[in-house]
Length: 134
View 1 (cartoon, helix red, strand yellow):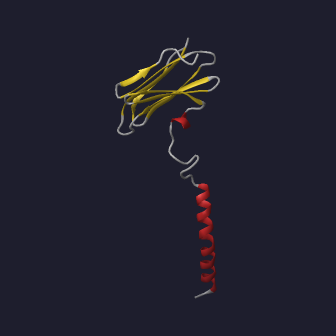
View 2 (view 1 turned 30 degrees about the horizontal axis):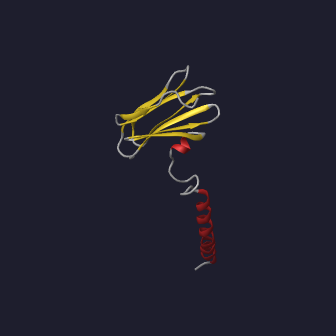
């Protein structure tokens, strides 16, 4: 055995734990910022309303100037028809619809000093609000 091989093995033994510790620090894992994403991470602002219906729920979030909405399925699974819409008073509705497995949205509208109307559905069953958040 040569000294070159011995010194490279010693160096490798010293570097492996160091590199493993560095990888644990840099790679995301479970915990803050590393778990699965949910609607709270998608919409900015504070949760304002959650309206439950038979197959899911419509979640509304608000900042000072914007309102955000997401429709979340009660049981995530196979893709099915889902929709979410949000309309500020005096403006056009923003709609997202299609086949999703977990959630539809987010949709965001500018609603500074304006009421909004929201609707959401999962697999043909859903809910709608009147003018809210005035």
